[in-house]
Image (cartoon, rainbow over all chains, first blue to last red; front, top):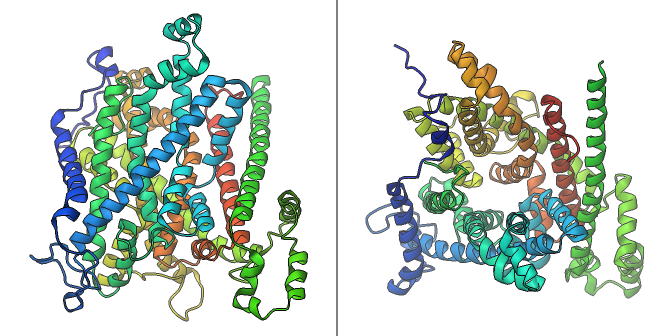
Length: 295
Length: 331
């Protein structure tokens, strides 16, 4: 017998179709656990374990996963799990700082465009469109090329290519808030434009900006990983997810699959956890828009 | 041709003109910004050109080359000179490859376009088929599997997927070659290229498709509750006709306009996939140009990619407007 399609075109009521299903809380648990474990590991393990992640142990090089080395060892005999923890620490730090830079730049541009308006608004939005037309990675590569590959170059290159989203969000939120009575009241009350921005507008859009920044972190980590993979990121000896995958490329040809498996899996799990958590957060903030991540 | 159709045609033409009028300043802005950045960097192309030989080179010769290249002139003057040549198709010489930039790009671009275009087409196909399948069985096991895999793939870096595919299909199973354009020493023919193209294209498509899958699924689910779909169903049309004839047709319209917005990601993905599979496209040249501070090549590549994105956006908008008569054309 053929299964009948499960979808029901006719909603039980109009309201049922309009109000999204609340994401059940238990779905958050795995995401929160994964993220909690990763962040704790990245922060705490380097303090607890008295082992150098650069510790070279040639006799035990290229070992597949075992009890002593759960993710195996790399071509220099370094423990892949331990290196993953350090890589996560570096990548998370890079991602956080870069996302913060992009949020600050984006908020500044968006707030300026939204509050001043007029030609400045049009000009800055055209600028946003223009920057959006350049593929991020290419622009990042150009910035890295100018500054030479280094930690600073990577952070700056990600920060300067990812402010567009927050700029657009801040501008549109400010335009919407400007129509609200409390802003009129502030204007009538004689507040200056700067005071209205700082006291009334920015606090109201802070949750949206924070959400966009949180979602930017995995993106920034991805960017760092891609740059490092191309050999344009962090210095080769530094443990970062991209460098580890880049190093593992050589060993792959001789059968060392575990060296690239672990960093990739860690990155995927972390990204999924962040986007899962922020998806629920977005549903709370914006209950009318159904989350893309409603699983 | 009726009057409204004609008016619509003219409005569409105006839209194209307006978007082209936006594209030109954007390209000028991007190229000028790159030019200024290159000038602001501490790297001197003349020192770069001489390398270690600058120690033995006579100062007259160095000065001669400085004058010939015009590196000490004001930035705006240099930029205008570059622009004059660029418009004529001359993007200068690549410092790292010691070839004209146009030649460097010309030799490689075809292969990159082949990879990106095939990957794009395959990703679209996957997105349509799997997205429709998932929406059809909303909430079922198939839907849950497809969405979960799509989210996981979206989180996976494309080069990591590439390495995994390389390991499984090229090294372990030995089904397909793991890199390059042809087998060593073999002539470049369709069979060789197709066999070598299979893995990179599959990886590019699989990493690019999840967004389309999720988008098609979401669009279909929303259109299932819209009046014309409910109406078609209530008239007793079979489900497959309702989905293909009513639901897909309306939910795919916004899809068209968003295709252009996915182009930067496609270019980025192709760049990384090329690197994994040593595909002879522009990726290697881009990375080398960045490592060797070869701004002539890097700048030309960035401007070219920007032009492709702008053109793609224009094309997507025109297709959208042509497919849906309700779309306003003044925005």
